[in-house]
Every structure is written in structure tokens, then in C-alpha cells.
Length: 148
Picture (tube, rainbow, N blue to C red):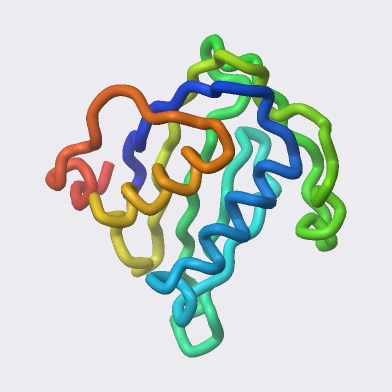
């Protein structure tokens, strides 16, 4: 499944450290604790990757792409290494500048669970905690389950 996700606006400069904060907030959420861990994804458009635990199908692939440097976002995604969770911690290099809007893209392939509205609400709350606010509507339930 590949579908458009939520749209956001930054209220401050968003840094590498903020992306790690989002991953840590998601990692501490009880909905995900037995399912996966989150890390920045080494993909040019930027994203956060679900790293599913061993008991789940290793073919599963799920990601929230941040659509960095698409449209008017002017964002920048940096190289992601194995040590990204420590290397980006306390790093103030800017991903998105203040007052920038961007959309997300939801990727779920190879049998990974489809995104749900409840799940997107968790993501919205995590983004909100670092100064990124949702604007616009949620995708419809049909859009979340329809494979494009």
C-alpha cells in the first residue's frame, strides 16, 4: 500500500535531534512496544522506518515518508548510518525550517499491517510534541486500505 498521509506545518526549526525524539516517542508508545522499533530511514525523501521484531514476518516493510525536499518544503535529509539513533541525538542540523508545510506518504508492503486512523493519531501526537502540527483532513479509511 502506498497512500498520502497527513499534512503538517512546522512551528519551529526541526532538527535531526527532533527526528530522534519522534522515534523515541513512538518507541515508548505501548501500541508499538511489542511490535517494532522506529529509526530514521536511509531514503532520499526522508522517513521513519518500522523495524519489526523477529517474531514477525521479516519481509514486512512499513514506513512514514516525510517527503523532504518535495514541493515547497525545502527540507533536507542527511545520510543515515547504523549509529543514527546516537549520531543524530543532540544534533541541531535542520531538517525542516520553521513555518514550512509538508505532506507524508504512507508505505506498507509485503504483508505489513495497513495504517489505521488510530495509528495516524499517535503519529500526530508525537509530531505535535516537537513543534509540528497537522493541518487538513485525515486520509479516509478507504484510502488507508486501498493499494495504489
